[in-house]
Amino acid sequence: MTLSVAHTTEAAHPLRGLLPLWVGVAIYALFLLAGNRLLIDPDTMWQITVGQWISDYRAVPETDVYSFTMRGQPWISTQWLAQVMYAKAFAMFGWSGPVVLAASAISATFALSTKFLNRHLSESTTLVFIAAGLALAVPHLLARPHVLALPVMVAWVCGMISAADRRAAPSLRLLPLMALWANLHGGFVFGLVLIAPIALDAVWSAEARLRKSLALRWAAFGAAALLTSFVTPYGWNALLASQKILGLGAALPLIMEWKPADFGSLGALEVCLLLGTGLALYRGIKLPPVRIVLLLGLVHMALAQGRASEILALLAPLVLAAPLGKQIGGAATAPSTAAPMRGLLFAGVAAALLAATIAWTSVHRFEPHTRGSPVAAVAALKQLKLSRVFNDYDFGGYLIANGVAPFIDGRTELYGEKFFVDHNAASGLMEPENLFRLLEAYNIEATLMRTQSAASKLLDHVDGWQKIYSDDIATIHLRKSGAVHSRQPAVDPKAK
Image 1 (cartoon, rainbow, N blue to C red):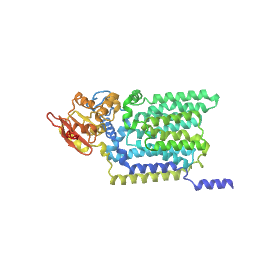
Image 2: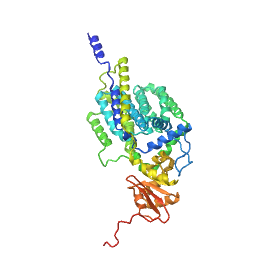
Image 3: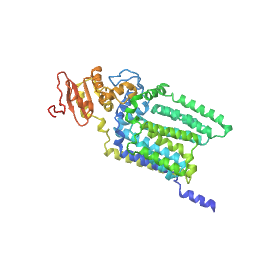
Image 4: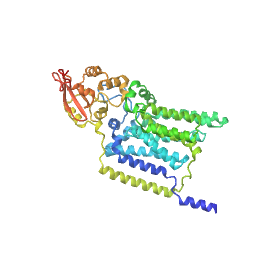
């Protein structure tokens, strides 16, 4: 009788374990509907342009070919594969292509996370983690190379954490993920760094007699992963390139995504940290020592750099899943193995998503945010046929995409710490003399700055610079001998 009841229960629920599918579908639909939000970063434009260059020349860049300030200087693109993917998507489908590609990667990322979490936690707990992770990560989920690497990162860490939970070494079948990651985004270095603490967790938790052999197997896996990361067009130079970014020093806090967390107003990070701490104290959650260190490391990264919030959002739940499941209760039932019906469902959902995507993209126009796209201003600038233009940092990507050599753009590692800091101080007038020094040192013929920027407003009051174009987004000042300032200081000398 008992066996009969058990069999009936299984047959009545042949589609258990489909939470990852529904999470993936929901998140894909969300980001497709809000597709223009994926295009708010002006760096997307130069990423696509580089991808087009790679496709056209069937080579990867070794030197800068875009700016006039750093032309010919060494520069490599560790994101070349993602750039090519975005470029191909754009060439075939316009801006719909990058939007669909990025939305698919984000969907796959959270579906993989859900699948892993649901092995250890109940569906309701899993959804809480997914919702919190989405809230933390969403500011950084854009149509940029790192988004295409996110599902690879999650799969890589899931594989290693699963091995650590079993007190075993990871399968060598994970290594192709490292090769793929190393060609998609420079963040693969973080994937290599994670091997050590996860290995330590596995060895720490293993029986004493097994620790030595387990440590050796993890060491072998780490060495193999390191060698696998060299499988890029740049070889081991891709690994070294990350040092340029980490060595930007004073420039990093000036870049929005690298700024430390700001608790001046209530945000998702603060809410998640406070609620997580409160629940851990209330339930008396205990973690293995190494996982505590790993979790604190992820929190520190998120506090130190805004862009690391997505790493905390995606990886912290994976670190917590197994020990948390043992203490608060895990998944109530095992996933179904009714493959035929599941296969039909997956095929049906895929067909429905494809049809919905085609329908939505045919009636909705995707385009980059106007804040980083000074369309009319650049059209006016190109008519002047100038070659030395001092531009706002955020306009660099649009200039590259439109064949105009920028003074600076989003490739901060190319320009270096001093150059970036000097430009920031000049455009923001933190050091007004820097503006005029750079204009003279680089023989600038015109400026293309935000209309509301301090530098743009200052040039309105300076002789020798003629305002020839201005709209709500950008203003052009042309160096012209004999030009008289267009605005007088708002000061009445007769006033007492």
